[in-house]
Amino acid sequence: ATGCSSIYGGSAPTCPYTVNEEGHGPAWANSLFEDNAEFGYGMNLATAQRRAKLADVIGEVAEVGKDENVKAAAKEWLEKMDDAKGSREAGDKLVALLEAKDCQGERRSYILENKDLLTKKSIWILGGDGWAYDIGYGGLDHVLASGENVNILVFDTEVYSNTGGQSSKATPIGAVAKFAASGKAVRKKDLAQIAMAYGYVYVAQVAMGANPEQTLRAIREAESYNGPSIIIAYAPCINHGVKAGMNKAMLEMKKAVQAGYWNLLRYDPRLAEEGKNPLSVDSGQPLESYSDFILGEDRYNALRLKFPERAEALFGEAEKLAKERYDKLINQKKSFDK
View 1 (cartoon, rainbow, N blue to C red):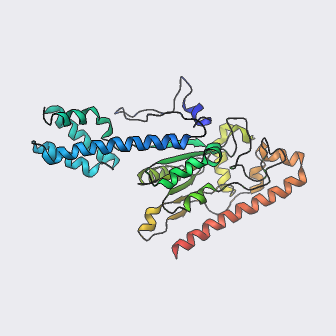
View 2: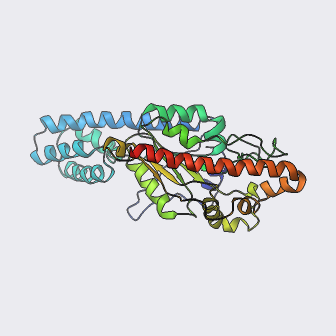
View 3: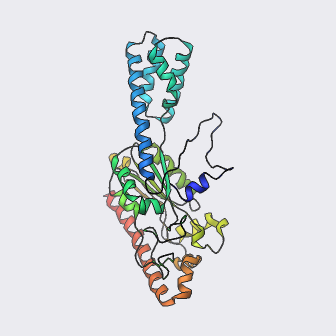
């Protein structure tokens, strides 16, 4: 989405997207702020349609081909076409055979011309909370409800970062932002709970600085899940006014989790289908002071300096809501155990 993610993802001469030793890596595009989900969804539908056509052609080769080795390779690919590693290995085998043998005529030409589609594609839609929680939420919700195999990664800065720090639906109670100069009076939208309510969406909340292993596990699980997935990542931002400095962003994530400000979780519908608990709460009871954490950021400390009585009331309410949010997760987990 147009915003922070597109700025740090596309500012020449650097680029965070790269390839591995085999030359495989992401192809990416930037979309408008308000239709990012629709844009990614369209990319997914186009890729799926093209692969379906390719599967039809390979199916014909598997049925009527004259070379038994090629037929066997075609059948193997059809069996593994929806598996990332398997489709690549089977596809490479099929391409090698077709390139070595002038057989199959037009079918051979079509498969070789579209060989980039042999490997299962991983579709990711990236964007911030201003897009995901707010302006583009309708599209995001449509993608989640579609049942399509699309992954969504939300960088949650809890504010409209790219357009100047305006309050958004992701802004927590008590935080100071543009259009909320005296502290936001209503609670933050709980996107994870909304997504989990579908029951068939993979959902995770992560904070890389707090638990990098949990973050990596969530990404891998989301990628392997054959359906919609959403990962919401806590993202310290310059608009937060982190007193320790933005070079301590990883530590700030850790503090947020330890104070109970941010919860780590994973919800995997596959586990429910196996009769297991689909919800994993990966962060424990708060170990650090909630108040000390939020006052380490100017977006909260500014309210205490300007409106001390209001700050005390809003901060107290925010801490209460944080405890309720964690208790709700624990109760949900218990309910699934039953």
